[in-house]
Amino acid sequence: MLVLDGRLPAGTRLPAERELAEALPVSRTMITAALDQLREEGLVASRRGAGSWISLPTATGSLGIVPDTPLLGHSMVDFARAAPPAIPGLLAAFDSVRLRLPEQLADHGYYEHGLPDLRRAIADRYAARGLPTSPDQIIVTSGAQHAFALALRLLTGPGDRVLVEQPSYPNALDAIKSVSAIPVPVAMTSTGWDLPGIAAALRQAAPRMAYLVLDFQNPTAHRLDAEGRAELADIARRARTPLVIDETVVELDLDGDPLAGPPPMAAHAEDLVITLGSASKAFWGGLRVGWIRASPEVVHRLVSTRTALDLGSAVVEQMVLAELLAAPDQVLAQRRALLATQRDVLMAGLREHCPQWRFRRPSGGLSVWCELDAPISTRVAVVAQNHGIRLAPGSRFGAHGGFERWLRLPYVQPADVLRESVRRLGLVAASVAGTSVAGEADATMPVA
Image (cartoon, rainbow, N blue to C red; front, side):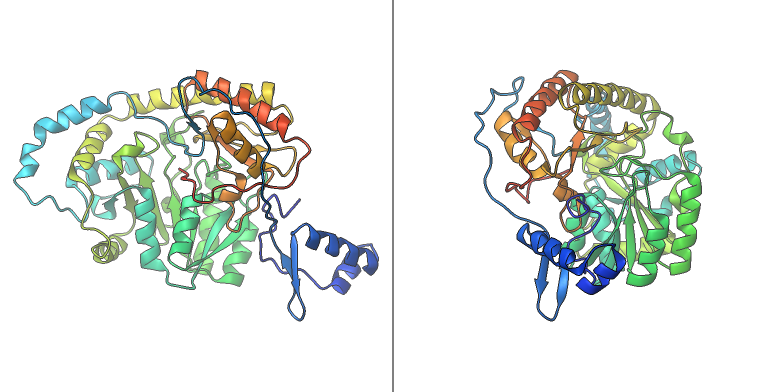
């Protein structure tokens, strides 16, 4: 179960049979028999002279389920992307920008750092959260994923290690692997971050950087408090490890005011932290505007390396976001209130239709991280497609797979869609009850 839950990542080397027999109150014969069974199930791999290590099972096939009718007019409800629709007022912001666009058309349109007005607005938002920031500490990017790619390009090279949470955001894991870096996962606990485990991993693996989501972690929705952030800063400072902190959903505090939350991580370790932000979750993914907050020196280095990838982000989208950030509190409060209602609808549906699944109430973010009653996450994702629902299996959130007992369920759909979707998920859960072999899921399924 530790393997399928992702707490023992694939590739973890196992002690020798004699060592296991000495450590556990069982005979070596029982240890041998247990390892043989695990090899048959694909959970352990061995090679003569190389020992044994954790592996992951693969299997094919799915259950023959008659597809449901389209879901409330949707050909396929996308639960793989935790991305809400655009906020009200976005068209008005575009209309306002259109009137001011002529002043930009006479210029070349390239802004490697980003539009000055937008950088100032982003800096002011950090200051409102208790972190004084100047515009020269901001670089505007084409989304948070682009921002992370720039940070990876600056800090890592092929073969370098990057510490990540386990589970973590799938697109970040893909980005790490795309630059031939090696993710070093540290398992999350039931209450959040294993800070002693992070300290040990920094000492033993010596990663070039760490990628962490401290505000409503994706997918667990945990949030690290101020005391934990201070401890994490001390750990990073002792190891001299840069921290890349993803704040994509920091504005989506559903139980409180984002401005009253824990201070940004950079407030504890200004010299070590690169902060990523984005408009995609709070305003609209189609804006494709993100940013990096770092020291002026790091910003200069990022801009110097950026020209190999792009020459700046789209001007119109930057102008729209600057317009939205001029008075963000009312529109963001409306966004949070709607998401809180949809969260409660989803949880009520899960309690009714999937009572065997366990979950904790997220205080923010965009999704519920569900613990299933069996290692069937991929099977559920496969069968759910026959019922008009697209899911990302738990294995997408592990650095090396796993998490077959877990499923991320976003609450970004309208309430009526959520109710019907969860009802259908209840049918899926019943149809796969008692099965434990994963089916084949599309590993390239887009996730957000």
